[in-house]
Length: 88
Image 1: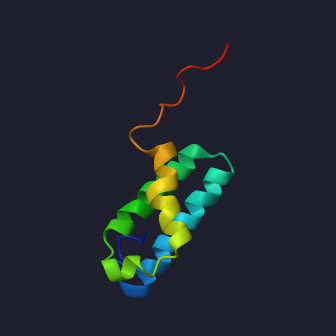
Image 2 (image 1 turned 90 degrees about the vertical axis):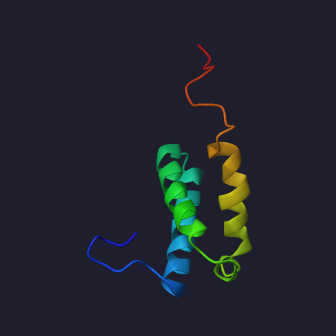
């Protein structure tokens, strides 16, 4: 995300930032760092929602699938909350 004194991202820079955030979230997820992954995913999703349909098509399909569907299983509202049902 841009600093407070910078202009908001637009065009190719916005698409590049969305891709970067999704890739960063995926790497955090692979490292089992769920808190960091969740934060990056939320930021990526917020930026993704600002894109037009034409811009969304420029995001690689693999990243779109992970952001919208695969990660929804783990971070969506229907997931099992962390810390419940632990073995003793």
